Image 1 (tube, rainbow, N blue to C red):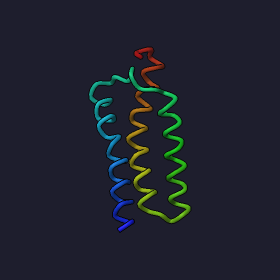
Image 2: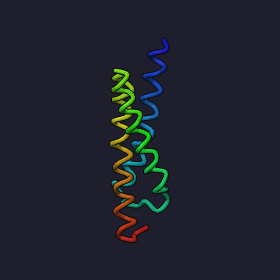
Image 3: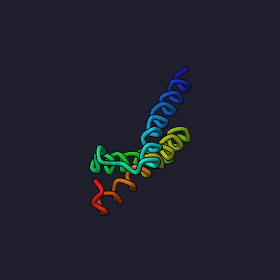
Length: 87
């Protein structure tokens, strides 16, 4: 039962970043997004992914790797917008 709860938690927290990533891709708007938060969050997700690999916890690794992709879409767009002074 605990594995099902873990899978549900991984799915829900991972998929929660998808709407933000889709919105940023569609609109290119990132003014309301905190650059420091996304930098720290992305570093944390990398750490969780490494931890998952080290523990041989494939669901943990996969969930965080997918989350990292979504977060990086937002982060990279935010950085580009800051450089271009769009934000």
